[in-house]
Image (cartoon, rainbow, N blue to C red; front, side, top):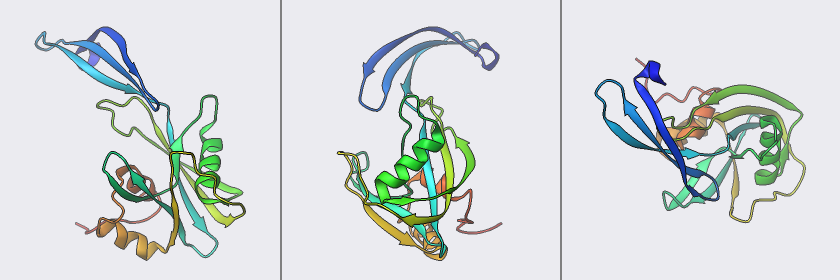
Length: 183
């Protein structure tokens, strides 16, 4: 960290909540000597699944999001459980949230959701030729509606703001051209 102009002086656990731990880390800015408390949310890695049916429809889920206090249309996603590989988490989340499964999986890489205060990664997986093989089994804190849309409807939903979950858009942009305009 010193190479970036910051020296870690201390770090302590402030709160251990359900989906993350709040750590307060004390850093010294080597440029000017300023000391600040940095809030770091320590959270497990996540997965996002772009699931596409044999007839090229995209599987999305609509659910209420507490932070925004509104419904959100997004790709199936969730936390990676301790000891679970991200591919296994992707398969689990897709089947739990939608009832769809696939035998054709392709890794699309990962992003750091917000490295300003989050320390995790979000892995992206593409599931091809998904089929409805079981009943969804959402977590107790989930109330989901499964939606199937075409790629044209997907792009329009992003343009219209119906899909506005930034990590879902980042995941979808690995497969689809979602640009509103071109330069």
